[in-house]
Amino acid sequence: MEPQIYSTYILLGTMVIMSFTGFNNRDFMEKYLFSPYLVKHEKEYYRFITHAFLHGDFNHLLFNGITLFFFGKPFEKYLFNFYGPLPGEIIFWAFALIAMFASSSISYFRHKDNPNYRSLGLSGVTSAILFAMIMLAPSMEIALILLPIPIPAWIFGLLYLAFEIYSDRNKKTTIAHDAHISGAVFGIIFILITNIEQVIFAFQNLL
Image (cartoon, rainbow, N blue to C red; front, top):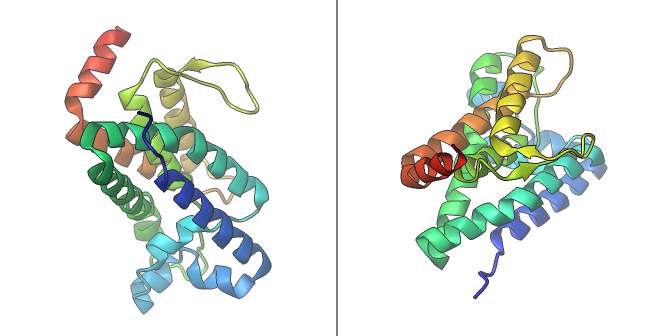
């Protein structure tokens, strides 16, 4: 029987509701976005989580929403089938929440004394989910909206990380590339620790 996938939709729905609230209420956005300075000096630790549900504009929201929809569902389904219904859902939420902290870690240590730094978005979590799926299914094909040419997931992952590392070192935009990198690394480490046999099997089949 096909598993009932709910958590991805709940995560997606919460993200949409909070983001649109933030679009129309700047005070709401300021209260919940990620500010390493306020986390350190005002102990507002909740920002590690709440910032992930906010987005700067509709395109930012759309990109993360699409990524979550297409990769969150199969990842949740995998956890559901591997661990069982209830444990799978608990692990999915634990994964998402830890990814929010992990993907913000570099930004926190870089900017904890910078009162002007702000960031927001679910990109770190979607990167974690994406790379967890790449580790589990390296031969699946991934295509971008702007470049709709399917390429193997493991190649996409290498190109993605190379681009993000380059962009982080040659920063020319306000995009938090370090969050994408941290999220990806967390997704990889999580799967290697919890599902190493499945990863080995998947890459053996790839070879």
